[in-house]
Amino acid sequence: MVYIKLEENVDKFMANFSVPKSMKKLLFKSKCRKGKFAIQKIDRMECIVIPEVNRRVLSRLKILADIRCWNNVCVSNNLLENADFLTFASQNSLKIMDGRWLFQNIIDQAVECLLDSNHQKWEMKEVSILCNHPNDTMIEKIKEIAMKAKVCNVLTGQIKQFQKTEEEIYRTNGILLNVSSNYKKALLKSSVIINFDFTKKELEKRCIFAKDSVLINVKENVEISKKYWEGKNITFFAIDMPTKYESYLEEFEGFDESILYESFLYKNTSYRNIKKELLEDDLKIVYLLDQNHEKIENFSLNLPKPLDKNAI
Image (cartoon, rainbow, N blue to C red; front, side, top):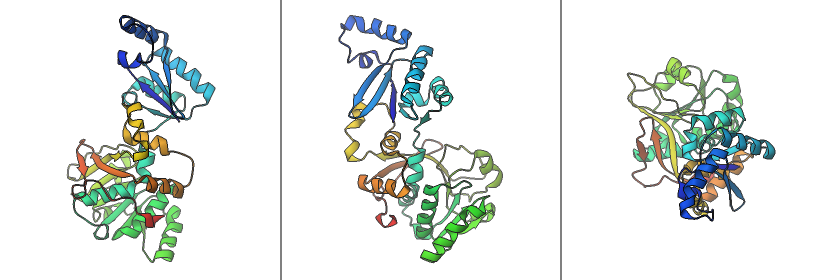
């Protein structure tokens, strides 16, 4: 994992350079023009600090990316909003951490946070899951949610992909998982809808939500407008950084905590191994963020319940 930070503050960028204060600003501008950047070592991690996003900086970053074979990068918030940098990352096949992988792994905890904020329980809720292209994590999450909710529907255009899961849940737990392409019937009865991979177009064309239902978009921030719908559209989340990583917050100032934690956890391994790490870290969601940037907090417990250890 490579970390890249845009530091436009002259004093902060020049903090590690032994030059007179009167020369810092001139040297800073010189480095910007020449496309130079600083490389900081944080334990075993490497953080590249750039003073500006310009053609020369991006050219030098590309050379370094090619030499070191970069794949995944975690960047500061201001770079997540920089069009030139995002274009550079896309053109060079760099995956930018955005918190969505982590969101997928803790989606059941996100629902718990939502229910706790309204003093509600799983066993009283009908949950619908929108998914056309399931991966291993999605399948495991569907199994966990099916065992908790009163009713669990999987709405998909690829019914055959879920037949094995449907049979396994019934065989091992005696629970019916409703797999269907009848979106309207199920969604109008559901108070919580989890969208794993439906696009904005699919949501607006195929789906009709109950008036006060809550939609949780996992894969991406999908802003939708439905005149009749008065429910919440959850687009992101915030975590309480686990204790063992708190010391990094100062070093990685300007990074989103949820995305930063995702970068620490991210690896090519099984869902079971990721789940174990989440349990060991006792990860907690502080709040959910909706389309209008309003926070949905767990008012009854301040922080949501830890992950269910029985799910492992």
